[in-house]
Length: 130
Image (cartoon, rainbow, N blue to C red; front, side):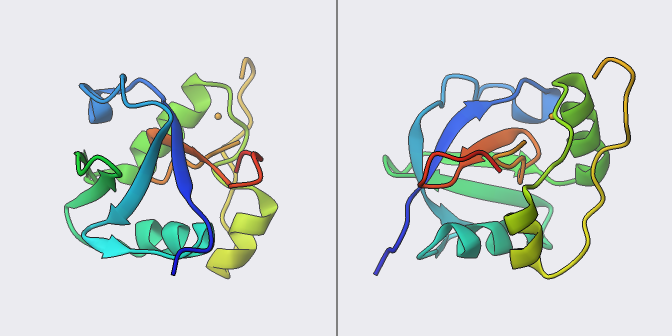
């Protein structure tokens, strides 16, 4: 039984997600074919993905496929380009159970939602950004 829903709010433009820019304010139901019951479960599914692609399935059964090749470098670039200081909020870092470095300070400086797929931005059900 679902305890929380995950809503894709914005897609931050990048070559990794071309064609997905119009997918804003949609509910994500599955990650790589697996359902999740909470935002924490969602984040863990994304972060533990080891395949070449991470597939987000919307409520309308539309797959959003992100190539995870060089995902850390792509994520960092997207965060810096959008002046987002950290990939995760402190609570998400705790869920993952590890220290995750924030983006390096940038003179002219992306809080996610996560750019789990680095280019996808999500919100917690409470409305807070990651």
